[in-house]
Amino acid sequence: MIHHPELHEINRKLSWMIAINVIAYSSLILAFVGVVYYDQLWLVWILLAIGALYIPLSIWIFMRMRKHIAMKYTTRVE
Image (cartoon, rainbow, N blue to C red; front, side, top):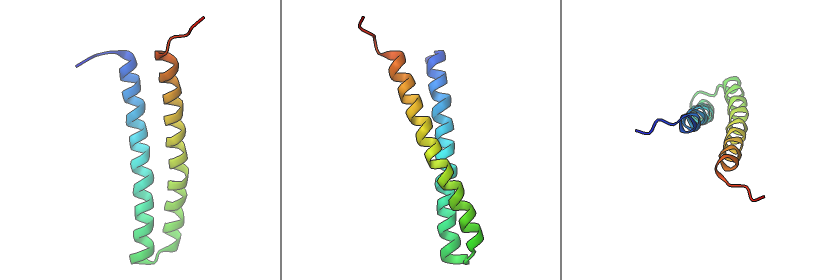
């Protein structure tokens, strides 16, 4: 096991992103189940709004993290 502060930071951000994706996609699946089986339209709109907010948030976190890693581990030619 490697104990490195930068790897710990990357791992923490990745775990946040995975949690956000689980919330987003489970809310979208629940919205689909609500429409097909229970015909609860108000629940569907709430869950679709949650999914629509969380998916761009996770993409934004991933892009920032990728840029951060690229800047940290690439050498600059001066």
